[in-house]
Length: 113
Image (cartoon, rainbow, N blue to C red; front, side):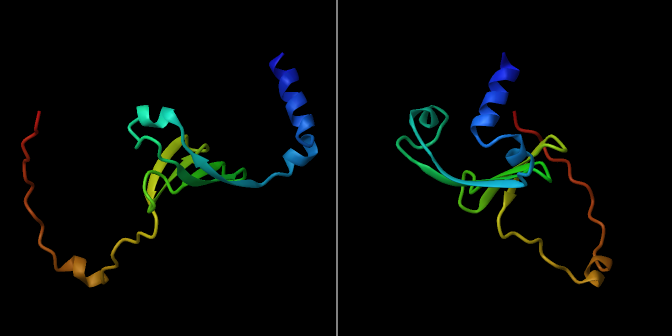
């Protein structure tokens, strides 16, 4: 029954030929409603997101995600979810600056219960 339903949905949405040629999909959406307030989001707030699906790299990107400067990437190939900061680049240090650093002793930090 599930296979028949899938075949019918694919046929109704353009057929297998159309969907086998799909390389990506980009959707702009607004997320809101009462369920999000129960998950800790501000009540009555709507969140605008762009969801980008890349069928070649097997990735789905949600942007922005939780903050305007963040995105979430689901990578199906590695079965991982990564939060990324947009526009962040690690500081560039001259190669010789690493040579002049002295090793620092390890510090034992007490754990908080």
